[in-house]
Image 1 (cartoon, one colour):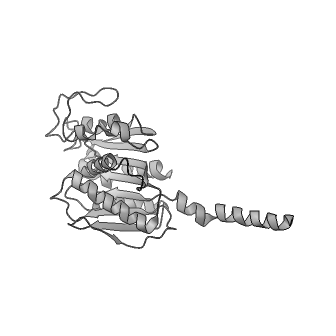
Image 2 (cartoon, rainbow, N blue to C red):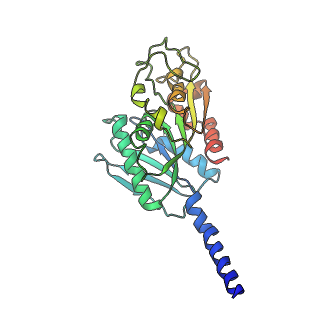
Length: 268
């Protein structure tokens, strides 16, 4: 009888801790989100760098049509190792960040039906970051959605673009701007709802031409992300890319940025 019990317990432990069981719980998809007027092509160099580094072999694309319907392109199974997901919005110009956040939700809900994941990462560029913040704001209480694990912001502008934010804005040590602009006021609720266990990496550019910006995005606008997320985020860090490679559109095609992503998201 004791022998039978030992065999039973052994089989039970095997199924509980078998690779397939653990696999589904520990693998985390990373969703890349492009900006206004762009497409999945802006994400490809970062994705290829991750594949080359051995992060995963699974890359899929989710296209969202002009009606907001998400369509999976590629094969995604529940056993895929840390898959990379390229979001591609067909309506990439006649759209605002709020609408794009709804597109994001459609992407995530579609992925859930295929992958059944509990956590995910975001990598956003430009307006893609605004869409991400609106998504996090509007779905903070939705427990049916997976939890944010890590967020990478490239060229985010919570306090507006160069033509929106006054040049004389000052920031407190906590990142609070002296004057708010852009969508900043709409994001303030994140100070009480941002996912507590999420880690944030904020990467912004400074082309060193005297504008203190990456071209369209002021450094000080990018830095206000600290004020919105750091009260609740598990960790928050910033990295400024200086010089010509800090230009707005070059941030997603930047070897330095790729290295930062690999280390922050996957410890590579």
